[in-house]
Amino acid sequence: MTHGQFPYIRGRRLRANAALRDMVAEHHLKPTDFIAPVFVMEGENKKEEIASMPDYYRYTIDLLVDEIRELQDEGIRSVLVFVKVPEQKKDNEGTEAINPEGLMQRSVRAIKDEFPNMLVMTDVALDPYSSYGHDGIVRDDEILNDESVEILSEMAVSHARAGADIIAPSDMMDGRIGAMRTALDEADFKNIGLMAYSAKYASSYYGPFRDALDSAPGFGDKKTYQMDPANAREAIKEAQLDEQEGADIVMVKPGLPYLDVVRAVKENVSVPVSVYNVSGEYAMLKAAAAKGWLNEEEAMMEALIGFKRAGADLIATYFAKAAAKVLNEN
Ligand code: PBG
Image 1 (cartoon, helix red, strand yellow):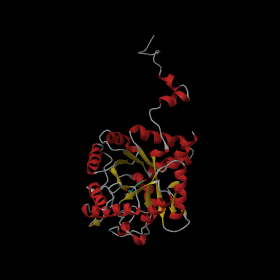
Image 2 (cartoon, protein in one colour):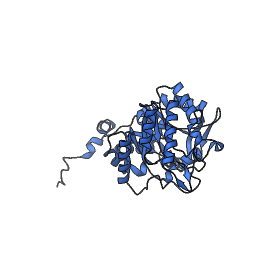
Image 3 (cartoon, protein in one colour):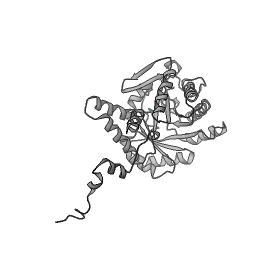
């Protein structure tokens, strides 16, 4: 007795060995898909492991350069820079964010001096600089939009002046992409790109990152500017608006709980789509692997190919170096 097309059609034929499986694989990962986030701190000759991110470190600029050499040796071509700002330099306006001698600006210069071909992306938001730990300026418990966009645009220009290749605004203020595009153009940075965190959700998965930078909000949460996890159509609206305002790349963040959003955005914009496999996703996998509950390498590669399958062109991930190593060995 036959059931439908069986036994003539057998899905297992194409799964019989590695050569067949590789030949028909619909998606592939390569080291150039990855954007490696890096955390920088003040000082010299120091590296500190981030408690909630095993095997991930904050570096002083001198040691960061060595780390970037390792990334480059594994074929990674882009890094996304975050800085841990000393407490005494924080204020409500995030003034330190536009200091030409600030930690971010010095980090960018140091990386570009040593590795001119490494693409340097910089995070633009006030939280690491804000005494309130919010992404914009605070007044009467409100996160001001238009006033914040002004300083964020200055921040973007300041990063470009330091040598950044791509500016990555993660603040979720309305209208910031258009404002930054104008500010960059007026400062003669017409070819400096914008990677917009377009669909950035108010997520508990950012917890370990906030430990890394000591940037947790001092009051309230980020729900008046970051998106509601219940919404997907709104992500399309945000991504399309950013595309119209001049974003060169749009991003969805976090990653694993939002793969449907990656797919939806991919189908509704024509710029490249990037996804951020955030700190909490890294922490979960590392914790389970440390307990022997998951095979770390396999679970990592499975998550990363999942992003490609969902439609991501680029993946910002704390696994960048480890995954590139796996790819280079095979
Ligand atoms: C800053 C910013 C955050 C992340 C990237 N940029 C934290 C936040 O918005 O609170 C999170 C990254 C991660 O968790 O890996 N605006």
